[in-house]
Structure formats: C-alpha cells, structure tokens
Image (tube, rainbow, N blue to C red; front, side, top):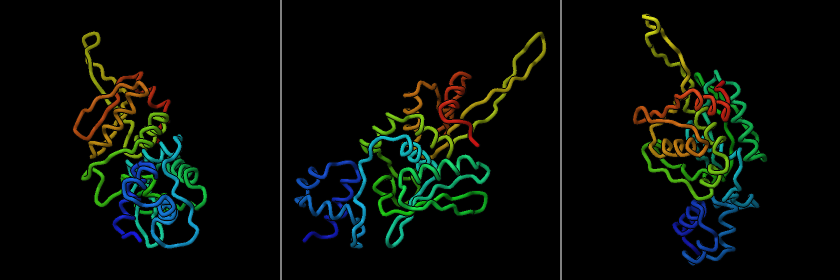
Length: 246
C-alpha cells in the first residue's frame, strides 16, 4: 500500500513528461498501480479515461496552450477540474475559436460559455486538465516559475503559428502607431500597424519570442512586459499566421 505523498509525486512526475517506466523505477511503484492512479488521479474510483499525456503534437493543443498561458486558469472541484479561458466579449471569432479548440482537445464533454462583465468565459470540465497544463498552480502565473515539458516544447516547435495565435489573441493587440518626418519642407504624419504582446511572466514572454524566431518574425522587447512586432513585412507575416484579432 502506498501513501498519498507517493501517489502525488508519481502523478506529478508523469504529468511533467517522465515515462511510466522511469517513474516506476524511481519510486518503486508497480506499473499497474501507476496505470490505476493515472486513470483516476482524484482517487474517486470508477472506470475513468486514462490520463492522455504526453499528447501528440497538434495545432489545436498548441493554440489552446497559448490561450491558457494568456487568459486561462484551472479551477478545482471535488470530482473534476474546470479549464476556463476568459475572452473579451467584443471578439466573437476568438470566443468561437476557443470553443472549437476545447472541443477538439477534449471532445467527450460539452463546452460552456459563461457571460461575465465585459467578457465571456469559455469552459470545459475534466479531471485531466492539470495533466495537459502542468503550469497550473496556486497564484498568478507571473509570480511562479513556469516550465514547459518536453512534449509541450515539441508541440510548439511543430505548430508555432498556432501557439502564437493563442498568445496574441489573448494577451496581444494590433495597434496603430504613428511617426512624423519632413517632406518638402513640411512635417508629414505616417501611421503604421504594430503587433504588441503584453504579459507579466518572463517565462511566457521568452516562449513567445522563441516562437516568433521559429517562424522568422523579427521582434523586440520595448518594455519589460511588452514585446513588439513593428516592421511592415513582419507585421504582415504574423497577421497571415494568426489572423486578425476579432
């Protein structure tokens, strides 16, 4: 019989990307016991669906990871967890996008939309959401060190455009900047678009920059929590990858 701390440690190691064989050897837990724990991480009993991690790389999960890191959180209930993505109520296409992604990643349960002041919270309930998003933890994301698992890094590497869509459509915006220059003895004003990504977490900012590098979009960090894509061809390339925010 294993104590609860061993169970918790085993689940944490598997959720972090360690193989079941490695966890079995490290903790001295049989693989059959690991399978039982992974099929019922809350210890509630019953024939629950086995833990799905690590996932195969997919555009749907990569985009959902971006949305989660931007405006998502996971709430715990007695028998399940709720993954909630808060979306600005003005952006109907983004709300629909998040709903489709939740359904694609977890098609066995309904997706709910809960209206709040100025936003729509898109939600799906499942006991395995912490497995899929091991960045979940107490307190705001920017107050904790965040680490990607190996399988999450593979997913972002294979689907960087989808990951950037989730990030920029949650914590990003396309703004109009302006500049002046003398033309024929007169000062002329020029306007140009710029993508900005704003996030308090240094880890998330780093992952955003790495994904932009991977797709060949030049960027610079204009403030500690602001990343900007300003050159015309880079703005056009990023917009073509992620779509306009709306």
